[in-house]
Length: 126
Image (cartoon, rainbow, N blue to C red; front, side, top):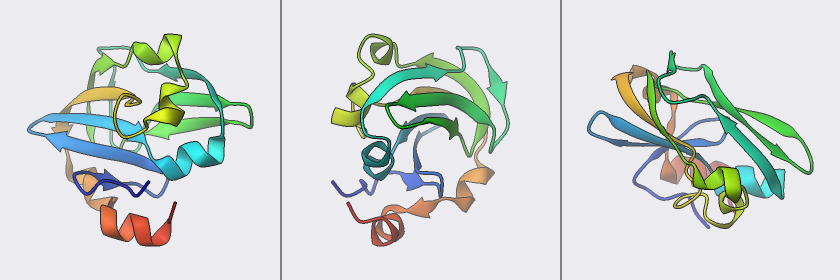
């Protein structure tokens, strides 16, 4: 599944979808395919403030544990609670129901280091 064009993508395979001052963060199809079966997701709790490039959580799979980064500064306002019961949502729907966190953005300048979908898709075909 190609990366949707309504968001930007980091070199570490997170997607960032900005809607006003709210950003939704998730992992790309390329990332979840590399991880294989996701077994556990732990994100920073609501209220956590962080700077662009900080680790905001981790994902465990049968292969490895991977840190999750956000490339905007802000505060976690929502964590996808559905992933606690069904971490496999990340594998089955990474661009939809498998989102990780929502962030109230205080500084979006770090997103300029991310790629548009066409560039990400060219570099990481699925």
